[in-house]
Image (cartoon, rainbow, N blue to C red):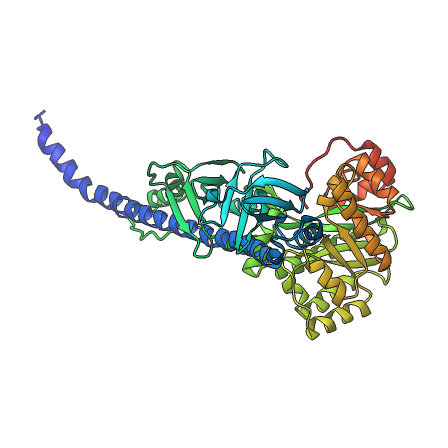
Length: 524
C-alpha cells in the first residue's frame, strides 16, 4: 500500500478546520474585551449610584445636626442650669441627634445628657473646624460617634450623632462594594469600626467629597469583584456560543441596578407579609397584629425591611409595594377569617407619599370590602422616616379615612418632631412608643422620665398607647405597672407568616410570654 505523507495530511486538516476554529474563536476574542469593558462600566455605575444614595443620606443627617445647633446657639455662655432643659428638648425633637453641648472658652460646660460638666473641646481635632469622628466616648465607649461643631462668637455648639445612623446608610450597597465615611484622618466603615485612613494608594478605592460638609465617602471593591461580574455572565453566554456553533454575537451586558431589582421583585410577587401580634394587657388577649413586609428573594432568602424600604421610598416604589401588600393580606385573611377574633386590628405602615395620595381611599376601601363590616379593624401607622406637610389636601384625605372607620396611629413616637406636628394637625387614635425608649425604660432614669411623659401625654389626649420592642419580663412588668395597655415585641411573638401567627394565637399572651426564650433583635 502506498504510503501517504504525514505533512500533506496535516496541511489538509489545517486548511479544513482553520475557518471553523476562527469562526468559533471570533465571538470569544471580540466578546471578552467587550464584556470586560461593559463590566468595568457597570461596576463604575454601581459605585456612582451607591455614592449618590449614601451622600444624600449622610448629608441629610448632618443637616438635622446643623439645624439643631443653630436653634440653640444663642445659649452659648448662658448658665447650664437655665440652658440644659432647652438642650434636652431640642435633642429629643431632632432626628439622629443624640446630644447637644455648649462650649465656652474651649471647655464643654453644659451637655444635654449630663448637665453641668467641664471637658476640653479640642477644637483642633475637628476637620475644617466642623466635624470629628470618634471611636467612642465615656457614655458609649465601643460605639462610633460623630460630633458636628457650629462655631459661635462666644464659643461653639456641639451635636453628638450616633455613628450607627451613618453605618445604616453605608450598608445599602452590593456585596462587592464597601463604603466608608472619612472625616479628617479617620474613617468609619460599614461594619461600624473606626480606623486610620490608609495613606498608600489603592486602585480599588474610589472617593467622593461632599460639597457641603468636610467629609468624603470611600468605596472599596472586594478582591475579584470584576471577575465575579464577568463570570456571572460569561459562562452562560459561552455555553450558548458553543451550542450555536459559528454564529457571532455582539455582547451587551447590563446588571440590574438596585431600583430595577426592586421593580422585578415587585412584579414577581417576592414581597410577602409577616404578622407580629399585639397584646391587650388588660384582658390578656391578642388584640391585633402589625403587618411587616419581608423580601423573599430567590437567591438571598428572607431580606429584612431595613435593607430595602429606604430605597423603595427614594425610588417611588413604596406606594405600589404597600398596595400589593394590602391586596395580599386581604386574600390571606379572607381565607382564614374564622380563625381570627372579631374586631381584630390589622395595622399597615404608611409612607409620606401614600398619605398625600387620594388613591389611599380606594386602597383602604378595597381592603375592607373583603370582610364583613366590623370583622377587621384597619389601622394606618404614620412613620417619621419621611414626614409630610399638613395641607388642606391631607386634612380632607384624613377626614375621609376617619369617616370610613379607619384608625390612625403614630409609629416610632418620640424619635423626632414630626409626631408632635401630626398630633397638632390630625385626629390620632394611638401612639406607638419607639423601641429605644422601651429598651431602656426599666434601667435608665432619663428614658423612664421621657417614657412617662409620653404615656402622660397620651392619657391627657385620650389616646391608646402601644409599646414596641418588648423583649424582657422586666420591660413587660414596667410597662404594665405604668398603665401601658397594648404591648408588642419578641417576648410575646416574632413577626411570622400568617399560618404561624394563627397557630400562635391559639395560646393566651401570658403563656406565650412565659414560653419565650432569649432576646432577638426586632427587624420590623
